[in-house]
Length: 194
Image 1 (cartoon, one colour):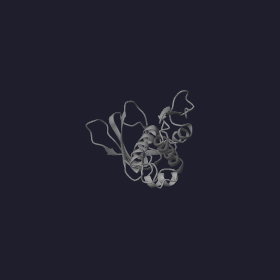
Image 2 (image 1 turned 90 degrees about the vertical axis):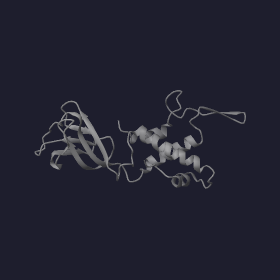
Image 3 (image 1 turned 90 degrees about the horizontal axis):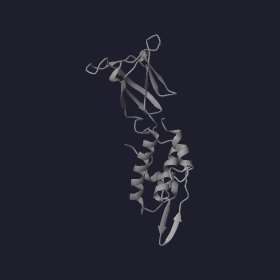
Image 4 (image 1 turned 180 degrees about the vertical axis):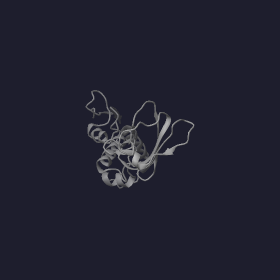
């Protein structure tokens, strides 16, 4: 899927003009983009203009389907079926409601009362778009910092270069754990789906 930033954005932000490390930076951009998406549980830019289709296994009477991508931009279609072998039927727009605060789709009656989704495997299918056209500026800064973190091997607790030893202090408030640096983790947590 799409990277969160491109090499030109990274090099401009870091004031890099040399092409010496371009191959390594390109690999790190792809890896860090996927790492951030995995950590956040959100693809951020992948489904802004490309539909995301999710099927929900409903095992008890609920009227809520929690979408995985956020923020939801538009619901394309909501479908349901009464059993696994049945075909999906489209739920009219007047019989579902998108709660943008939680990115949840509620099943309702035409009068607006809650109604349970049918139960069973893949009993509900929702097609929608979500995310951002471009990586938000604060998240872009965190991605840039994270690429630099790996480019400069700051994630390694101890390095030996030409006989000299470098000790990287823990960049995380977690004791003896060189995890995401706190200033990066704070930004990533703003985009994390819990």
